[in-house]
Image 1: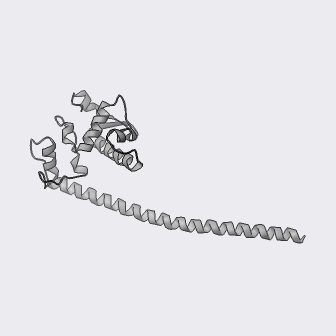
Image 2: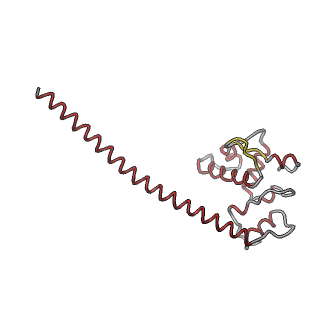
Image 3: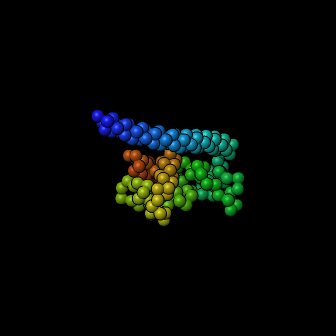
Length: 178
């Protein structure tokens, strides 16, 4: 019977070693999880702060009456209009309104809208990336998806189904597409 108890002790030691390994892995994952939670928290706070700043800047700087076109949009969002510095971000993409053309958009947004306008049907971000001259990498696809969502929010595009983008119908119906 001595060999049976030795076998049980051997199995118990192996199981104990596996438990200790798993506990060590869990501890390492908990450290990584906490670091990612902290990173997420900082990003959320940063996004909220930037959104507040943008909203405050938009409230302080009214759009010039009768202004339209890319220079007017630039002047409305940047105190450095006409200088070499361009505003990059949320305010650089104006809300669509009758009479506003894609020329009012920054170059990359204009390219995106033109690609979608030329497409025979709904388009996904990963299909747009190579057509605007970017490598088909995850970061570029996600950046483009963010721009697409912004264009939808501002009325330049429609998203009929998640991830499928088309020209905005109200613009197409009024004859101002592209």
